[in-house]
Image 1: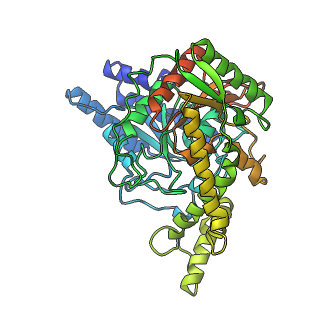
Image 2 (image 1 turned 90 degrees about the horizontal axis):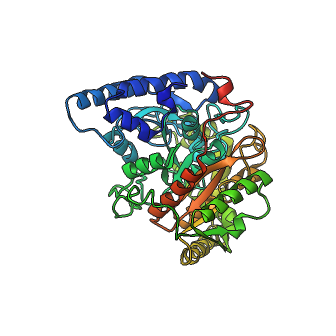
Image 3 (image 1 turned 180 degrees about the vertical axis):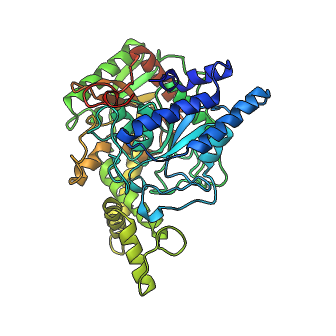
Length: 494
């Protein structure tokens, strides 16, 4: 593996600032890596080689001229194909948007460009972010670099797999019910769901508007902190954006956990978790205690209803949001004899099975006579979950749990069992319902040599303490996140 693709983002920045390497060299090394790995992993729907190299050369020119460059200058980044990129095809991994080229950049994309991050490609995903395995893409499934016969998780599986495969040191995903954290756990990298409203959703193609949040992916906690600081901040074009300052994550990043109170969520440590996940997560939590944190048990009494509430709220919102894909204004159009037939044919041909399933669930839940029994009741449960978190944080600085109940499962293993697939996010969904930040950190391998993720959670706008705790544990464990073992990318790619 080329040394430049093995380096983390902070390390690459250090080399670039010392002029020991150019942005062009960094970018070319990663594009070469993608050419080697992507035939096996399928992390990208499309790569942006020429645009990436042009941007890198411009950064080098400005550095040579003594001009300022952005906070992410020269750092390759994999961008989930759900964020609008002006003039560049943005599909949400759906045939209904195949060949769609937005006339504007999402706010996150604009901030990335201003920070001089180099977008090397649009990453694969579950169609419209609906899935936990990256098998629901209309184009092809993505594979886990740790075992190419297993899923990377979803829905941000492409971005996560790209970072895990060393195709890019940074990635951007979106997290509606765990779609950054769960694949991060399955692929052994860092994945963050920020506080709802901390990162703008303008230009993010909506799945469930009250839950969607853009988040960073990286191989090290300082890299994830660097990326979150670059994309966070108030945006007047997003009505849900919080009018607050960008969090200062680096001031306290190395402060350690001594004196912090860590609550272990008892409801997330019970039945349904594999033995391998339990042992690795328990050992990691014990290490937090050894580092000086006070570890206590806490309860989120209504968290067990999270999956049920989520699978009424999210499909209801998706039923509303996806009604815009009608074959009239943009995207796929399948002609019919009447407007109604045209719309029906377009949606039938353009949407995949999982998207159709969720639209139908949501439409039913919102229909006359059922709204109060289903959608409204789910919102009441959401309020109870929010109150549970508030009560837990009254006595704890951060909460801890597994990120996923199992490690990566085989491709196709859960495709015919939607409930089993949905339960992949049983520990991550409650944080989305509460709107609070959470992070997945790799803390070891199970007996099959597959990564296990620990989930750390913090109060609303508690990102500084969240990153502080994650960094302390990362330093202590010193986990090697390079995919290895039987069936891994290391066996088939240079």
